[in-house]
Image (cartoon, rainbow, N blue to C red; front, side, top):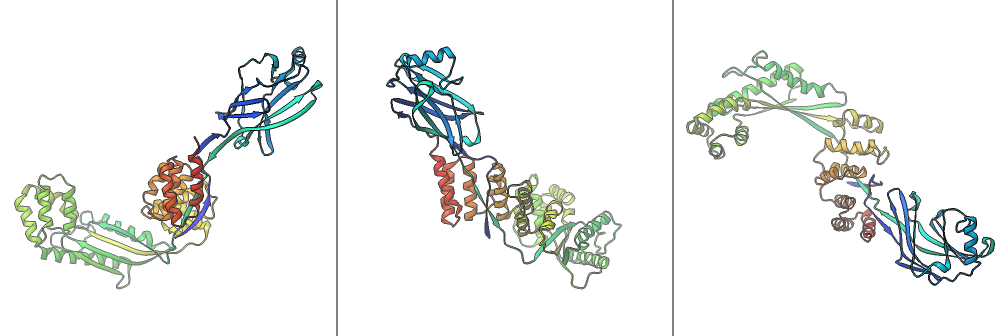
Length: 477
């Protein structure tokens, strides 16, 4: 199996939010305490306590503090705080101006600050660029006419949401050299007592024979399929002697072979036949699943082995009522003919044709063909995920099919289905890695770490990055 790496962002991700701000910062005579930067619903909220007690502002000057959110080329100024000397304060009061001549800013009179810190709160609509933004406070010392005499900036902290972005490792299945398949069926052909010739109009034979023909026709008339062989095995019930049942099973199986061969004109040797005089395995399954009073005792007789005629007589003699029940309700089903058709499906190499077959006849496709078509699809798209989901329905016990289906389920946020697939995905390094991804998306970081470590030791390169992301996630509150 060859893994293929596809990076997909899950529709939902394990994430941790962090306000990476110091508890206290100083900018000259201004102190900033209890700084918070965090989203709340659709709003980004900023808060802090301003310690302005040591700030000395001359009467005709002002100190303006302007918090800003900055992330690269993106920035946004928040409400400013102006600390004014006496004369500048009254001037702004008379003219109804804010800290920098704009409305909505907070204007404080330096001489009236007192000893308590000033609580600052601001909120703005949240935008994606704010993830990773720094909170910067610009201090402007202003003279007359708002002329800036000095200016400095201090970074107080910021906000960053740590998002786990999984790298899903899809595994390329081994290609089949020949796509060999088979169909199996069971028919219940009725025969008159002690007779071996088939009478199509006898009891339900017409329907049973039509069922066999329909199974053969479903593959024989398909241009993409080559039928290779047909096998028939006949069974009789334990009623009567073993020798008589052996004769009936052989004769009746031969009769069915002749019927099918004559109908289709198959070449000699195309149909292989075998028979079993008495279907004791079928009898045992029926008794084990039944509610018979002496179920355990009858099972013990069946399992004892030895002469089948003696066992059958013992059940009849020891438990006559239950024997009659078996005779009426079980034995008819033990007289059956099982058939198997072996065939080969041609290989498909055109991605467009395979994509159509995924929708219409997915049972014709191999694991490798599903994978080949998926590589031509948009990763994470509905068609891409659907291809792997259909594949695992066709191959429900295959570990590779389950692993890839688990990745597709995780990519769209369906962790419940992913966990079910991963239970059947085997124990390869890629499967361990996928279980680590599933645990991380479910925020079970303790379970994820050893899985990633074992996957990394097994050669999954993506596991090292996953461990680095996991370490960052675990440090966040």
